View 1 (cartoon, helix red, strand yellow):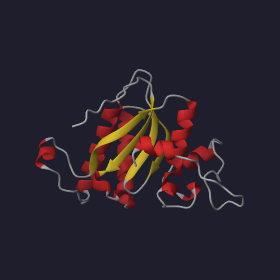
View 2 (cartoon, helix red, strand yellow):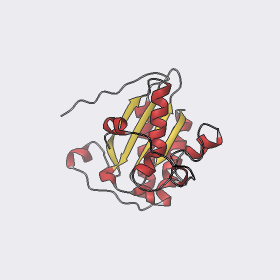
View 3 (cartoon, one colour):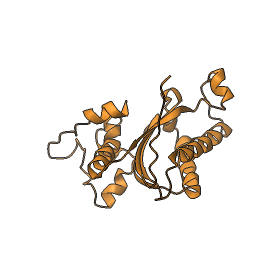
View 4 (cartoon, one colour):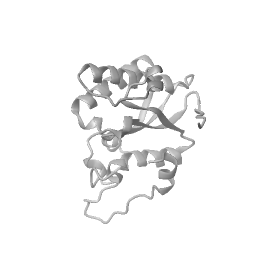
Length: 191
């Protein structure tokens, strides 16, 4: 079995991929989106972090967080988010996938994939590449033709702050557009 080593960097900026169990499209449901938002807000109130970029798709989410300068504990935050969401989801009548006896002994539920993937952001170029990967992800998966038409993304906030033009990653603009080349990132993210 492979050994997973987390990169703990106090005050670090991290890219995360978090997936539902068996890639079930839970976040098509408005209730699931609301519960996830509440779980993230609750975790942030207990253990602060700053979200630089995020996107929510039906079966997974990507985000970039920066932790406080003396803190490297993103694992506890994700455990809190997943646990709060799971309790709320099941209490509201949401279903789960059956898990193995071994996972049940560890109190695992069939709502989230057990693990998550993280990457330490190394520099400004790395941050830009991962933010653009996040923003373009709904187009990559075929959910929308343009980045700006996907509702569940912080791309809209990035545009409002002047970081991106609304037409970035857009195939409906009047001018020709070529999508960014994410082939190298796809290999590291493993989607």
